[in-house]
Image 1 (spheres, one colour):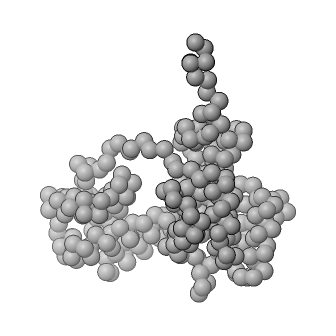
Image 2: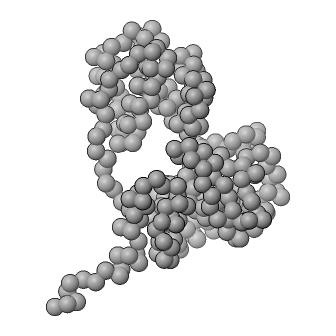
Image 3: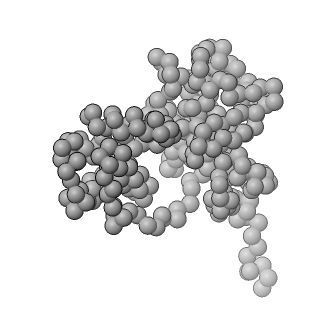
Length: 277
């Protein structure tokens, strides 16, 4: 798919984040292949022709709010950058995000999860995500040079929204990373694939899924649950929500305040009106 490769090159030149590039290209590749769309069909397509195909694809794939939004944004950007066509997909753009609370693993479940990992590299990756409250892409982009063991800080470079931030480096994590480094000897990225370069996102997700099963954790949880759990556990220990906001890299404190809805301490300290009867 030459036109898809061209789109990827344009996004790289315009310095879109690696996560956005991978997500957009992956969504479009699936769409084009499953609907047998080639460059000629796409270039000549009108909104009236393409929207019904998009709707059928969204329904067939059972896309949720985020996936539907990403898919539509990817296709709109593709038409603009590759064919210089401005397509209006507003009629099928999701307008209201469902307000679901994040799933949280307790500290005992986190402990059980990490104890279930026998592979040192896998253990170091999952521990780093939880210990620093990282998104999976932030972990994969971590470089050795981002670890400052003298100041006990870690630099998170070009995270979501192309922002940098600094988080603490826990002594326990540093000890584990030193042990991992001596055995695996990465050269650039902190966690590298077998052939070098950035570790695969799909492989990282597979590591988490297998570890979760091995630990016997039944509740729904993804890699991102480790980040949610990090924030909630900090809040439960009394950490100021504004500090948690900085550690997570949230622009809006309202996003961080979501964790007050799932924190045991916050909920547990609410006095029921029954007590006043």
